[in-house]
Amino acid sequence: MGVLVMVVGKSGAGKSTSLRNFEDGEIGIFNVAGKPLPFRKRLPKADRCGYGAIEASLKANKLRAYVVDDSTYLMQFSNFAKAKETGYGKFVDMAVEFERLLEAAMATDHDTVVYFLHHPDEDDRGNVRPKTVGRMLDEKLCIEGLFPIVINCEVRDGRHVFSVEADERGIAKAPMGMFDAGVFENDLKAVDTAIRKYWRLAPLKGGDAE
Image 1 (cartoon, rainbow, N blue to C red):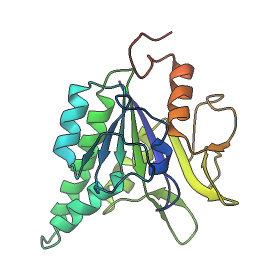
Image 2: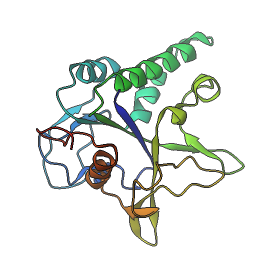
Image 3: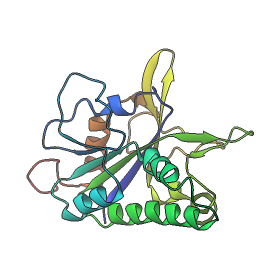
Image 4: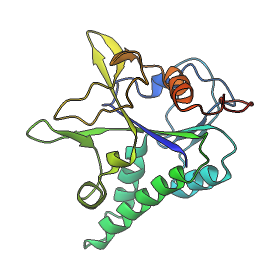
């Protein structure tokens, strides 16, 4: 069973930038919106890919790390494609599409980590959850519950950082002792290294788990 990691942050918080330290062949990038990566290093990516292409790649499982950037747009693009449809059925279909993607990610082997970069949604009480379409995913599934690690991506004092500091209104979480601090640099490669060390997963390229 693969490891699911959600990175939640607003546009411009540094989610895509956190990929900058990966090398070619270490991670499969599903670039849903087809945007250029926000750094000079060239990394191979699949642009404008949808659910089918992502699920096929995860099933083949040729790499030990994948990232869906940005998984919110998978739901939003599907929502616009069904804009002229009426009734609750289209929201059920969209929820099922996303749930099946989560199932595909979990079905990867135990040395695979799948990252979902995602936008947050905040209610009028300040409670934060992953942004979705419709209520089915929020009320019937609670998608963040399927992720053992949820990282906030944010800007603090002019710095782009990751945070796993939990509070009563947020969803950030990580296993005890996985990270040295509650707030740290927005470096997803360093996060991947920490995860593999903690759970003794095989490295990104070659070799077996220690």
